[in-house]
Structure formats: structure tokens, C-alpha cells
Length: 337
Length: 249
Image (cartoon, rainbow over all chains, first blue to last red; front, side):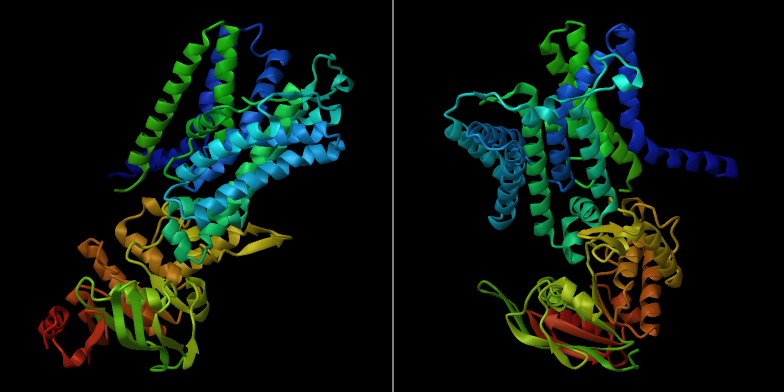
């Protein structure tokens, strides 16, 4: 091989990690451009963009939680039910007349405790796979939510409780119109994602989460308390589902039995589209955000074009399969056999 | 600094049961500074179980471990690491999705602490990794390369680098050349000889007589979970050692 060939080769190899990291963002940008050309007046309007963010607000919390679990090569099927149970507890506490700061904190604690329950079940009961434990709690948590609420919606919260899901940050001081506000939920998404980006990439615990997903035996042999880290991960996942419940309470002003039904599958789909590997150890917080955005934009764009929601299902399913196939190709390419 | 021939680690009458199965029975083992002990035996003879007892992964059912003359009870791999006892596993125990440096320091990363949160010091990890790989004369493109991109021999080298990054006194290697291409075997054996010169006691578990006779000073054979035979390498031959593995003296 002459040196020119080698240069070309190494340039190519250097390009791969960037593609791995930012390829999904490229797809997102392409989608935005395509949607813009299809719906030039509406798609990139202030109203529609904020709408997309409001729609993905609570899903993005579930997806982030499920992402951390998937990095450990686990799965959490119960996030939708955790969110519903946390929402119902919030509604009951609110109706009991508790002050707003108590109401706001209850779904977070409830979500955390549900996640802790999952984590302890998986590690202490030595479940053969997290799928089984969280499939069980998918039913347990939703059933509990229906038991405590009688299976009927509970509506009507104060503005303080609704602030994170429904609040608006006025931007008229920037010379913008009154309709051009910033949804509080968008700011919340940004803050939570930045915190978890730092957690996963900069802290030792985050590194250990990736190590467990890469090779749990290596982590164990390195003296890492794998079970403790897993309990932390599932608890955080539950906590994020609790934040999701708080956002949903604000958006809908109601606790209702069908809240978050099947949303665990949306959360998993967003992670997979965003490049997280089901085998664990691979994926980025940025990728999950892109995955959530891609699903949100797809639904929004197809709604704008009046395409049937059945087509949305077909398209999202196709993107999942395609995204994973790209992942398969990349693994063939980048890994020595 | 341990002087030459100092007794580092001694296992006395180690016995290990798994339910009704006796994996080890009254096994004794000694390793001195700067020495390489070869442990041979057929599949199921108890080699790997013995190594897992020494590394703190298994607790012995009976018997005791003594480190530098003092009796020690190992509750976890972390305890044995703190004593300077390191293990290189047959499956290498590396996380392929992480770079070389992060594998070498996995579980013992240098951090900057901010309250409860421990932030990784990536710069220090890289510096220490490059210095350590240089010391062991291990060549890789970059310390940031992911382990899954390395060849089998390079992975073995990383596993050995990992075991010696924290002033190890005893390094236990389970089949260090089993998965390697022939031209890579020599490099790993060179690494082992290099470790001996720095005063590290090395225990090598291997099926390969070539490896045993290239690096070891002493060889012991396990048979059905018991000490079967032991000899200085200079006083034995390949055929005799192979006989021990089959249970013949």
C-alpha cells in the first residue's frame, strides 16, 4: 500500500466515529429540510415547532430513562405504567388539597420508588432478564393506578402544578409577538438532557453503566458493584417517568387511566432509532434526543399533510428496522471478528 | 519493594464445594517474588476454581490464604486488588465498547470529586495509559482506540497492562495464549518475562507445554481437585508434565 492509499484509508477510518456519533443528527436535519419543502408555510412556523416540542415533552423523559436501561443491555417495559401510576398519585394528592409543592414532588418520588422496585426485583430476585420483571410491573403499576383512582379520570390542577407541562415563557421583551412564547417543557427537556448527558459522559457512574453494557463480567471483575449500578439505573428511569407524569399532568390537566398506554414501546423505538444498541454499551444521549425528535417530526409532518395515522405506524416501524440494519452494517464494518 | 524470592502468596489447604460437588480439596500453592509458577491440569481439574478463589471471586469453603505472611480473607475482587493481586481472565474481561485507557483503569478511574459526584479525569487516564503502555513496550495506535478494534494479541496485552497498572505484586493469568495467533504468542510471553524481571510473581494456567517451558520456573499439576505433583522446571520434562495432567506419575 503506498502512502496515498494509507492516507485515504485513515481518513475513511477517522470518518467512521463521527458518522457513528452524528449520523443520526444528519438524518434529523434531512427530515426537517424535506418537511419544510413539503409544508413551507406551516412546518417551521413558531407555532408548529413549539407544538412538536410540547408533543414530545413527556415521551422524551421516558425515552431518556429507557435509554440508560438499554445501555446496560436491559429493558424497561414499565415506564408507561410508572408514569400513569405517578400521575394518578399526583391527581389524588392534588384533589386531597395538598399544597402545590407537595403535589409537584409526589410523582417524582412515586416514579423513583417504582424504578427502585424494578431494580431491586431484577437484582435481588435474580430475574433471568429485566424483560420479565418489568413486564410484570407493567401490569402491577397500571393496575395499582386504577385501583387507587377507581379507574376514572381525575381532573383540574392548579397553575403551579401545571407549570412544567403547560407554562409559557413570554418573549415579548425580545420584540417577539405574544404568540411567540417558549414552552416551559422545552426548557425542561433541554435542562434534563444536558444533566443526563453530563452524567453519562463525564461521571464515573456513567462510565460504569456503559462498561456493564459492554461486558458485565469485565465490570464485575473490575470490582464494580454491578447490582448497585443497575438499581441506580432503574431508579433513575422511574424518576424520569415521574417527571413525564408531571409534564403530562400540566398538558392534559387530568389524571386518566389510559395515560402512557404503550408509550414504553415509543420510548424503546426512539432509543433504537437514535442508535442505542440492544446488546448494550452503545448509544448516546444526543442520539436518543434525535430519535425522539425524528418520531415527533414524523407524526407532526404526516398530520400536517393529512396522512392517515396508519401510515405513521408503518413508517415508524420501517425506520426502526432500517436504523437497526444500519447499526448491523456498522458493527460488521468497525469490529474485528 | 519486595526482595527476590520473598514469599508473596500462599494458599493453605484450600477446599471448595459447589453444592455436593468438590471442586478443590486441600490444595496448597506458593508463589514468590520474581517467580513464574505454571499450573497445569485437565479440564475440570480445578485450575480455574483455584484462581477464582485466589482473586476473591469465590470464597473457599475451607482453608486459608496468606499474603506476605499474613492471613487474609477476600470478600471480593476489590480486596485482592487492594493487596496487589491481579487476575487476567481467559475471556480477558475487557469491555469492547470502551477505549484502551478506560479499560485499563475500569473500576479505579482517577476522578475529580464534586460532592457525591465523581467526574472522570480523562486527561489523566490518557497520560497514565500512554506512560504505562510505553513502560511495557506495548504498541497500539492510540490509547483512545476501542478494545473491540484490537487483535487478540493486542487485547491480551491490554489485559496484562490492566493487571499491572496498579503496582501488582502477583499476576494470575488464565490461558494467556489460548486465543492467539502463533506470532502473537511470543509477544505475550515476552511480556510475562518482563514482569518477572520487575519482581512480580506470575501464575500461569496453561494447557500449552510450550508456554510453560518458555516462561515458568516451577510447575504444579492439579488432578481431580487435588495437588498431584510439583517440581522445579529444570527437574522435569514435557512428557512427565503431560503424564501428570493425565493422572500418571
